[in-house]
Image (cartoon, rainbow, N blue to C red; front, side, top):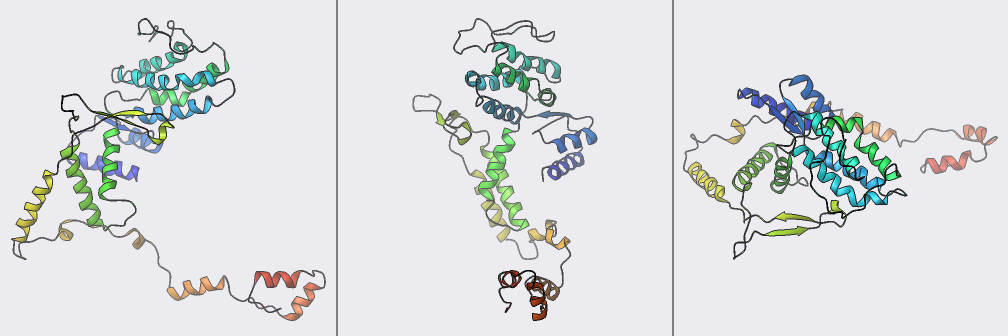
Amino acid sequence: MEMEGLKRMVELLISWDLDVGVLVTDRHRQIAKWIRENMPNTRHCYDIWHVAKSIGKKLKAIVKHKDCEDLKPWVQSIINHLYWAAVSTPPGEGELLVAKWKSVERHIQNIHKDHGDLFPICTHGQLQRQKKWLKQSSRSAVKLEEVVNNKSLLKDIAMLSGEHQTSKVEAFHSLIIQFAPKMYVFSYIGMLCRNLLAGLHWNENSSRPIATTQVGAERYAVRYPKYKAGGHVVKKIATEPTYRYVDDLIREVVAGCRQTPDERTPLSVTVDVPPFLCDELEKPDKEEAIAKHRSRFGVIPVTMDEVLAVQSWDPGYTARLCIGWGHLRC
């Protein structure tokens, strides 16, 4: 569905005479290949969160190994470094971004210079030591080097987007589920209307300002999501959502009710409803399907002479017949 959705989106934008300059997606390999072959003038970038999530899983697996516990306090710092490397690098400077990322391996070993030609020295100032530095050539340092210098990962990091992310799209998809829960089945027009309602609600409330207290202080909340495994995140508390679009819809409904039947145009006429997917399948004859289904459990004719002939060298044959075919009288 992701591939089909991308193709339809690109076709829609082209029909509006729009050129896609930058396209940010997750690390979907088939989509990356399709963009590379069909959109040569578009700069394809990856969302940081999806790459950071993959790196976090690998690091958390490493710290469970013996003699790698000293890497655990650095896991979140390494993820933060990835975000910094992507955001602080100008667009199109993939090699510089990779050089910044690779410097983290030496940084947590208390080596802050001679990283390479593109990024020779760390840009931070005087550090207040809060974590224990990794020892050079230790098992955790070797494991970290394997993760940091993975060739496939470096190619993806070079394509990270420091300007735009897919978080807004993920949030909109979460909103759609509230209007059209996956546990229920809707008609095509019903699903379309619910998606349009979600779009109206999103357009009105996606940019809500942060809520404040009576004294004017900004409000925040501490959450404990499951993926943090006991950790916490700090989120801004937005102002209450509004529903002004509902009043507009009610006015449209009232105006439609005042029209004569000849003036009304049913939605089913204006919307091109596609056929059901099951209509594309070949339907078997009902009688043949029933006969084929019953033949799996039908009685297989076996004469008593055949049973006695086999039982002469296999005494358990009769018993197995009775177990396998419960309706067979032995």
